[in-house]
Image 1 (cartoon, rainbow, N blue to C red):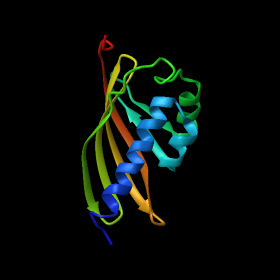
Image 2 (image 1 turned 45 degrees about the horizontal axis):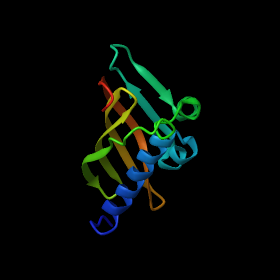
Image 3 (image 1 turned 120 degrees about the vertical axis):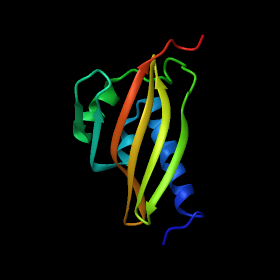
Amino acid sequence: MLTMQTDYPAIIALLSDYFDGLYRSDSQLLASVFHPSAQYFCASDGSLLHLTMQEYFPIVAQRESPASRHEARRDRILSIELAGPVTAFARLECAIGPKFFTDLLTLIKLEGRWQIISKVFHYDLQPLPG
C-alpha cells in the first residue's frame, strides 16, 4: 500500500544515499540504490551516452570525489512524484566539479525496497563557487 508515511521517507533516504554516493564517488553505496538492471542515459553533448551499471560503477570508483576536493555540496531534491504503489519519479539537482546536473530518476519498489531503475540527466558547465 502506498502511504505518505512510509514511501516518501523511504525515497528520500534512498536519494540521500544517492547524493552521498556521488559526492564520495562510492560505487558500493550507489550499487545499493540502483537496481542491477538500471540504465544510465545522457545526451548533453549532442550524442547519446548509454551505460549499464556494470559500465557505470567502475567509472565512479575511479573518479576523484568531490568530497576529496572539499567541494561544497550542491544537491537537492526538486520533486518526487508517486505514480502508484511501486513506481515513482524524482527530479534532482547536484554538482560534480564544474558540471551542474539535473537528474531525472525513475524508481521502482520491489520486495518492499525502492531502487533507481533509470537515470536520465542533463548537465551544464558552471564555474565552481568561489
